[in-house]
Amino acid sequence: MYRRSQSRSTGLFLILCAAMLLLAMLSQQTWAAPARGAAKSALAPLEGAMTQVAGNVDRVTSIFGDVSALRAENQRLKAADEALRRQVVELNAAAKENATLRQALDFQRSFGHRMVATQVVGRGPDGFSRTLQVDRGTADGVKPGMIVTTSAGLVGRVREAGPHGAIVQTLADPQSRVNVFLSKSGLQGTVTGGPTTLQLQVEHSLGLTASSGEWALTSGIGGGYPRGLVVGELASVTHRDTATSDEAVLAWVNDPASLSLVFVITDFTPS
Image 1 (cartoon, one colour):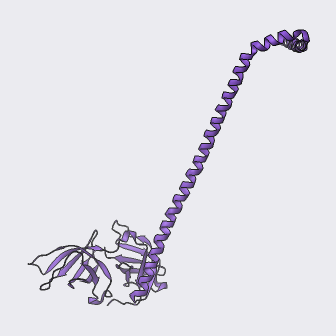
Image 2 (cartoon, one colour; image 1 turned 90 degrees about the vertical axis):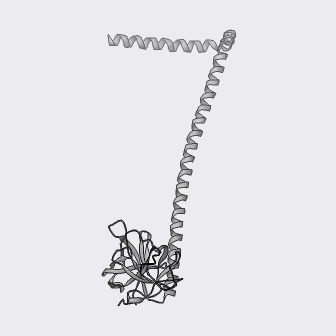
Image 3 (cartoon, helix red, strand yellow; image 1 turned 90 degrees about the horizontal axis):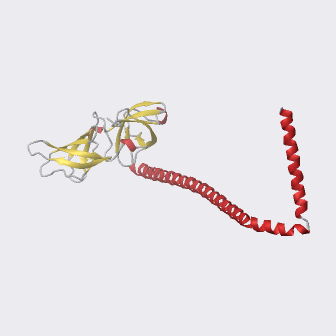
C-alpha cells in the first residue's frame, strides 16, 4: 500500500512539472500576449502589495539593526564611564596619599627627632580603636615605650614590639595619661583617655581660666613625652570656683580609625 501511494505522488509531481513547462512554453507564444497582459494587470496590485510588504520588512529590519547598534554603543559608553570613575577614585586616593606623605616628610624634617615611619596595618578588636598595629618592629629600632605621633600630633606609645611589627596604645585607652599646657592661657593639666573623647583636668591658677579653642600640647613634665606635641583642641570647659581644677573636653587631633601612616620617635627615652 505504501508503494502504491508513493507511485501516485511521483506521478502527480511529474504531471505538475510537465504542465508548468507547457505553460511556460505557451506563454512565450505571440498569440498568448493578450493573456499575458491580462494576467499582468490582474497581478499588478498583488505585486505592488508584495513590494510594499518587502519595503516594510526592510525598514523593520533596519530599525532592529539600529536598536542593536544603539544598545552596543550604550554598553560601550557605560563601560567607558565606569573606567573613568575608577580612574578618578584612584587618582584622588593617590593625591591624598601623596599629600599625606609630603606633610609627614615636612614634619619629620622640622620636628628635630629621629623617627621611623610605619604603616598602620591593623586596629584593636573593639569599636574604639584603642590600639593600632604597625609594620615596623625591633629590627627597625622600634621598642616598647617609644612615643608614636603623626604630623598632626600625638597618637600614643608603643606597648609591644616584635621583630617586624608593634602594637601602639593610643590616647583613647583609659590608662593613658599625658601632661599638657594650654597654648593661650599657659595653664597646666592632665589628659586622660576615654572611649569617645579625651578628658582634661585643668589646674586652677590665680586670674587665669581656660577657654574653648585653646590648643593642648605636651608639656614634657614628668618625662613621659617630649615637649611640644599637639594633643588636641579644647571643645568645652566646665569651670567651678569651689574646685581646684576645671574639667574640659578635648577634641583629639588624630582620628585612630583613619590613620594610615604614623611615626615612632626613636631618640627619645621616656623617664
